[in-house]
Length: 101
Image 1 (cartoon, helix red, strand yellow):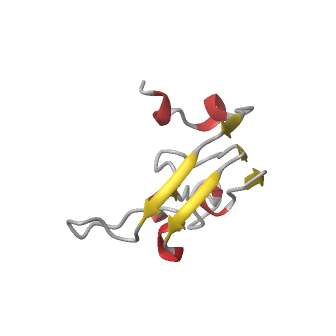
Image 2 (cartoon, helix red, strand yellow; image 1 turned 60 degrees about the horizontal axis):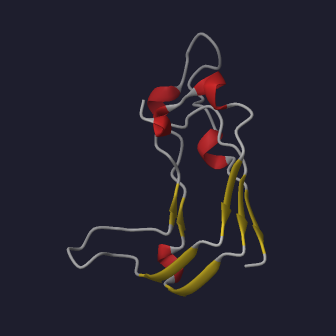
């Protein structure tokens, strides 16, 4: 707990569907100067990120740099006994499907 901390095999087979969500007035930085994004990868998802399906989504007045943020894999995820210095690539394998957007 909380559910956003589900990792590894516990996340397999997930089905994420967001229907009738509106994203309005996203800027790349907040009024306090922090970066913000409409879509951001869960930082706890190192092993598997299920496809996210967006249905009937409305995106209005969202700056290009505020649309999505996908980070590079964390180098500390590398397992020298399994794959050497190569970290898990799940953060690079994100699929978002938009229907009726």
